[in-house]
Length: 264
Ligand code: SF4
Image (cartoon, rainbow, N blue to C red):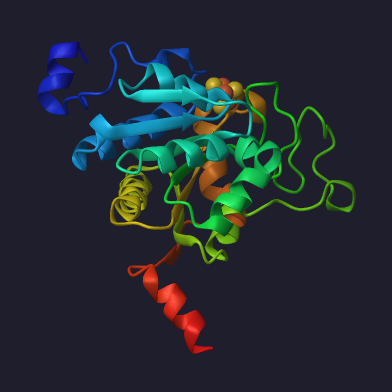
């Protein structure tokens, strides 16, 4: 489709850079699709002008060349720690972190858990491709049992490497979390639902206070040793069985958490 026809049919969010960072990704990578959803949501909610992205380290970091917004590339795993300072100093800003599953739940596990414990008024979009994609496909906390990675060539063995970590379910258990969901982008229908989750998460921050989290499943064909089409089928037939899609927490009145506590 030529550029003019594309603009006439669907258009681009104003913050979407042309050419976008999508050109830096492996064929079949779904990270740019998630970048696109976030760009559309920022525009739909008219918050792009005051949005500040705290970028983790990983393939998702190319978001910084996909969006024309303020972007702070953080030290590995420190997006929520830096984001806490930025949000507290600029409470009117919409501060969100974009992190991979390793950046958020391994290297950044402490920052993740403590941001939720404190109930920071921040939003995280976590890209879960079940491995460390950027550095060669090593085992991550989210790697499925039996999944072959460069550090588990015979497949993840729960007796030695444990079980996959469920970030969206974990986030939902924290009192400081007001919203937690898991989406995917492997079909048009789930794409639309995931956009709704991400929009809801940002809306929670606008309404405040409280932490909002959306995990999004995403394909990594080269490290899964699959074609792009096979990768989509893997998500549909295998990954969603371990990581079910849906909302795990949605609190409309953050103050109700404290009221419940006082009643006990
Ligand atoms: S290594 Fe995986 S996550 Fe990284 S760009 Fe390639 S497909 Fe995407």
